[in-house]
Image (cartoon, rainbow, N blue to C red; front, top):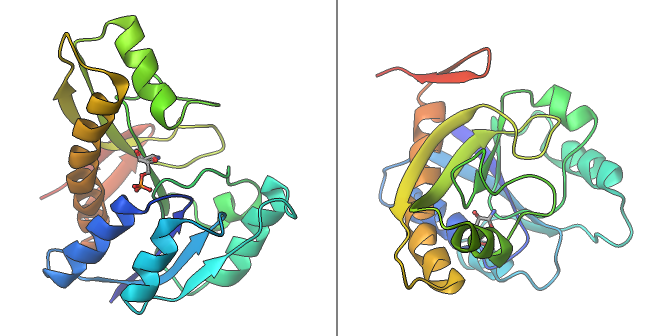
Length: 204
Ligand code: GRF
């Protein structure tokens, strides 16, 4: 069985989409751990309700480096893939080498637009609307040393309407995220994903 750890900071709707995909047998995976860097993250309750081991790592007591090391201690040799599903801490150090090409993230824009340091949450959508893009969407990508800079696994496109506010766009994109993340995990867990330089090839 393909084993994953899901890292969260917030409401965990993407985590829920993975849980639901496992329940419906779309994914043949098991979630070994849900790890949160926020104590009150709603996603923790989602994990507990589904009998998944949920852990909280206090962010204020950890630098990014030590959060990364702590997570590595927990998941090392126990999971095949780490999924960042709305996880706000930046992973650094050993975990990136140990889990090279085995950490993925979901970002609510079409990378390389509206991404990078400090671009998260509603800000991403505000910037997309302010810029006047006609399309936005979401991106699932591998995590490397940079911020939102790793190879892109898949993207889903959403139309930006003239009268959209950031919250409306965010909602519409989130719906697509809930399809994109399980789809990417499915390809990886079935061994269909290859990385050639910065390009991801999905073989069927
Ligand atoms: C999503 O928009 C995701 O793209 C971003 O953070 C948000 C998390 O939402 N990285 P949720 O916690 O999965 O509901």
